[in-house]
Amino acid sequence: MTTFAIPTLLFAALGLVLWSVPASATDDKRATLLPELEEYVKARTAEFDQIPTERRESLGRLTAYVRASIDAGEPVYLSFICTHNSRRSHMAQLWAQAAATWYDLPGVRTYSGGMESTAFDPRAVQAMQRAGFETLRTTDDFNPIYHVRYSPYLPPMTCFSKKCDSAPNPRDSFAAVMVCSDADEACPAVLGAEARISLPFVDPKASDGMPNEATTYDERCAQIARELLWVMSKVAE
Image 1 (spheres, helix red, strand yellow):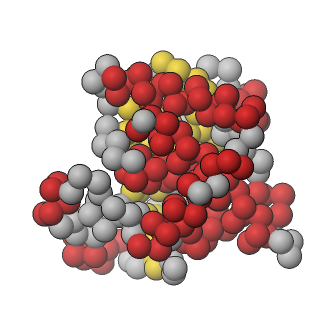
Image 2 (cartoon, one colour):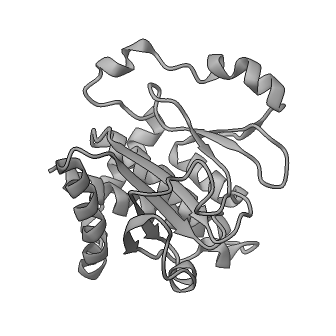
Image 3 (cartoon, one colour):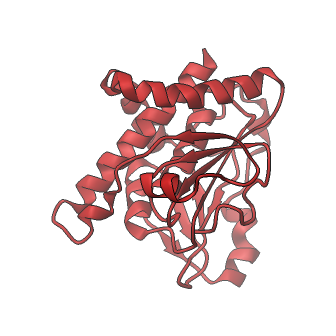
């Protein structure tokens, strides 16, 4: 996949054409994913046996929160939080939303944030592209805005780096999912969160500039996809 950068005003004029949503979307029992992404998802769901037992305990807490909210007839807001909101938190946000779509859980809405605002790292963007997401970069500043498409029927997600309490992130009635140990330790309380779940992933940043850079990012992408698909599969049961 390719990242496209176009002027903001041009995007505003053409965005509805580029990202139009077919009227038939609401008629589908399950809103399907993009074809390449769907194949990637099928491969990851075949790897559920690779998830260690101790890891499933942490994932189970996230499963329980999502299921309890759905059972109560309430929307599910998940905010994935890391220190810089540059890699793991974005990847988790996108994969959680795609997983909820795959398992037909329309009440789930996902977000991401950090202790500070930096930028959605291009290496992480490229890893998501290789998995089958389509990205459209709409600004050229130090913290670019990406529109990320995962379904042919649903609107794209808007991704950019932000603090965890910045718009459009929820201010209350959400679960704060801490995807890095540093943020988990540095932020003992997330204002407005009704649940806090520790789910750290190893930072792929350690491979930046190394020969194994792409491989490391792809491995992290696959792990995050596998585990969040497992969570939504358990909720769907």
